[in-house]
Image 1 (cartoon, helix red, strand yellow):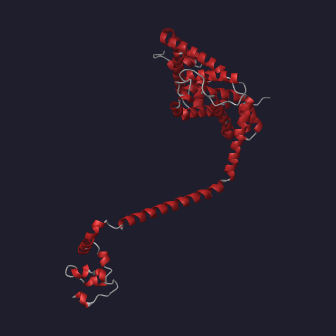
Image 2: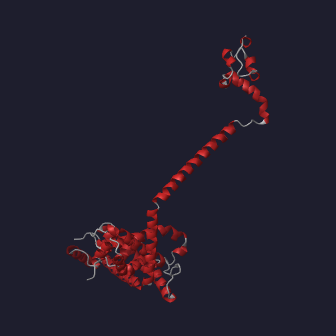
Image 3: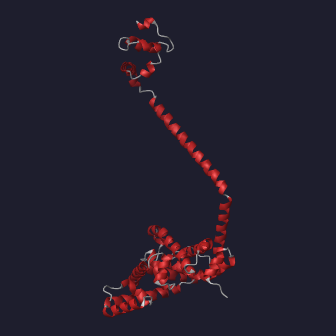
Amino acid sequence: MELSDEELCKRVAERDAQAFDLLVERHQARAYRLACSIVGNEADARDVSQEAFIRLYESAKRFDGRSRFSTWFHRILVNLCIDHQRRNRWWRRLVPLAGPGAETGEPAIDPPSDEPGPELDAIRKQSIGKLRGLLAKLSPKQRAAVLLQVQEGLSSREIAAVLECSENTARVHVHRGITELRKALKRK
Amino acid sequence: MITRHPETALVPYLRGELSGEEQTSVARHLEGCASCREAADGAASAMRELARRVEDLSAPDLAIYRAELYRKLDARGELAARGNAEPRSWRPRIVGLSLGALGAAAAALILIFVMRQGARVAPPPIDQLATQEGTMQEAAMTGADVGLLRDYPMVEHLDLLENYDVIAHLDEVSPSAPANDENRS
């Protein structure tokens, strides 16, 4: 019988390496993709999503099981992404190369990847660049709210739980985010 | 009955998240409001487009990703272990640093004090030397240097105004010399 995420998390709290391995395997691709959509950069998405797993390992004891594991883990991940975006905002304004494609949708100049397949790498970067161009005008919370809804399929109530705000506030974030998204799509 | 445009309820409506009553209210509003219908259609197509672009994102090589994660976790574990093993080693260092900082601050204060004292006793310019003697006498007359005069026991018995000559030549008198009758007269 397959163990639930919540059960695995309890085992991680008891330092069960195999349980942690299973959780990483289950959530790594989605965590990376969500981080990539929010921060708009492959290398940063890797760092941020890996940091989220490290935080999960370190603070598994604090998971009390009152919310679903996915909500709890999303909260860790999204908070790290939002912090990352806020920390890097001034840098992106000062150095245009750090945030290319925001207006044009062109691919970013990312640090070199250590993975094979330069063509695949180029396609991936192009996709990220286009997505970043689309989401450039959204605030970190709007971006997170919209992506949690569209990419992760979360309801307004679940988004509110992740962003630790009221359901109405979550709806406002989504509404404003989608409005900006529509404007960006019209510009293209 | 909705009296205002249900802007923030449009996306939840499209996703079927609203309660039955609210869902019906928004549906009724949309029937009679062209701008909200347009907004709802626009939101639906924007979300579809975003979902399509998100699907284009591919994950990195997950084996490499995981290996990197475990490396980081190990490094963090090592750091934590080192942090636990060394709580005593940094305390003396901080105490040492504090003492050093205190010493430096004290030395700086002493240096400033000495420099200020030095500045006070610095010799006057050569053109002022001529007037210095007169100034000293005046100081003695006005009692500005009374502290100095008290070093001379005879001064206790002098009337400053009447014995101006004695006071003017105090530098020729030994401070330890007892006062005598001659001086008194």
